[in-house]
Image 1 (spheres, rainbow, N blue to C red):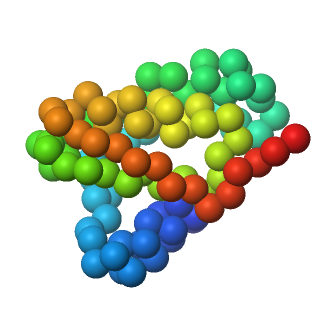
Image 2: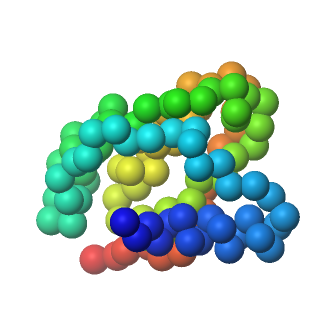
Length: 101
């Protein structure tokens, strides 16, 4: 349903006059909620769950990976690692909030 990161991407893309790439990567298998997990549990829960669908669409590009909230970084790391399997990809990350304890 509602995806806060998509809303952030669309706003950033509009301001920068850049496209949002919707069909490049997917998480075909949904995972348990991360909210009550520690760093190691979060990594194990999300590791290997992203799949690069269209590597040619990002080949030789500099990407901005956007997340709404970074808690441990496990989701960004797993997604980013998959994006970096495409040829000659440079990756930057943006987030709206960072959770702290």
